[in-house]
Amino acid sequence: MLIPRVSSKLIQRLQLLDSNFEDNFTTGILFLYTNDLYKADFLRLTKTMKRQVSFLNVAEVFNLFPTEFDACKTKTSYRVRGKWNYLLMIRFWFKTLFELPQLQQYDYIMRLDDDSKLLGRWFNVFDEMRRKNAVYFANDIDVDLETQLPGTMNMKQVTSDYIKKNNIHPKQMNMLNQAFNNNTVWNYFNNFEVSKVEFFRRREVRHWVDTIDSTHGIFKYRWGDAVLRYLTMALFAESHEVLHRPAYNLPYCHKCL
Image 1 (cartoon, rainbow, N blue to C red):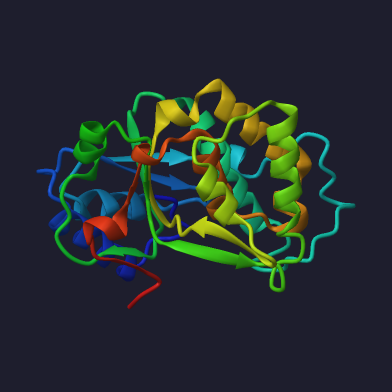
Image 2 (cartoon, rainbow, N blue to C red; image 1 turned 45 degrees about the vertical axis):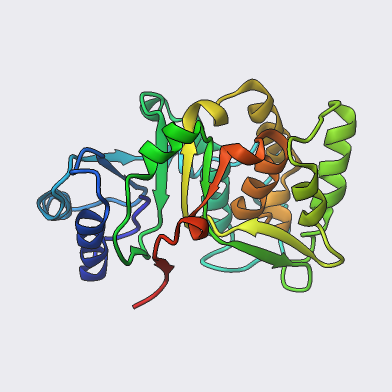
């Protein structure tokens, strides 16, 4: 969980995680942060959780731009939370997370945003992924709109060119064909997701990720990690390797009270 700050609402959501996630508190939680936290914040979070708590300062890698990217001269049509902050977060979740040496010890990583809530009883999704030999546990499907994010549809040509140049045989061709419509691109609403670390460390997946990163599309057009995660699954994961939260009726909400 990437946390910008510690608040009473965050504490309440964490308590829901403890009470609703049925793993007998065997799964630890790692708090990633980029801003300085006070000692009291560390203590408050540690005392709140019944499971093992760890902290990792990712400020140095979070704020890295792609190679040959000029942050001073590059223009972007996206202006939310500062010129680059949100786009740096996208790059972190899409690329940098799986490069962190501290995470290589884990088989699976569950992402929960600090405004995510597990609303009811959840079985141990890590166990289910092991049973199904899955590489990804997906959230709801959503869309990004060209009218709202100009340059979104450029991903279609970039993806097509990548497939041809690298002789890629997409694992889920129907999923890929459905991804792009006239002015929309499908995505996974990935403020919740579970990822198999080994899958995202595979050579072919890393090559795709690095290629997308080199286009600077994340920073020029706000290509989101949600869209890019969807395309990654279409290209490299078999359909039986991707599980879907709605199919299991696991109650969840994002940015809810």
